[in-house]
Length: 182
Image 1 (cartoon, rainbow, N blue to C red):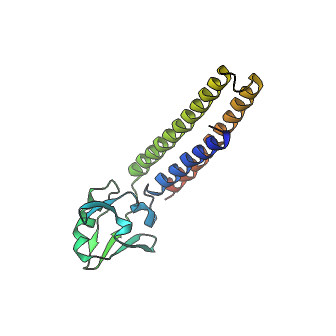
Image 2 (cartoon, one colour):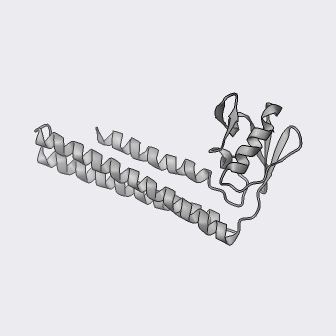
């Protein structure tokens, strides 16, 4: 594995965290809140965003224009069963999701979940660093690289790790502020 592979894998871990954070609910309506919700459709679990057009007509409402009216009940049930705490209201072809203001207790709970997501990403980053360094130490043991090259690889891996962990901390702080903002 080369250093550029390590950088790409670590970037993917940070991108994954950003995606996870999009599904965490804040008090503003955001279509990406529904990204991780799947409904039973056509004998398979399908993401809701593939079953209808999701939009946020105002900051406190999401609407889902369902393409197949036979799926409305299944989509509503999937939303009710999710951890978002939303109560879907249907008027035939459109599902409306009023986004209630978050209680202080729920905000704190969401910041803990965000912190857990961030910690999991940091663990992935550290594991990538460890695997990379172990790989380079084996190359050194097999006389494929010199001691100086090994030191350079270890240094580069540590710098990359530190940069990505700083990035995760920044993203987490932004998400915390977004969740706690009333």
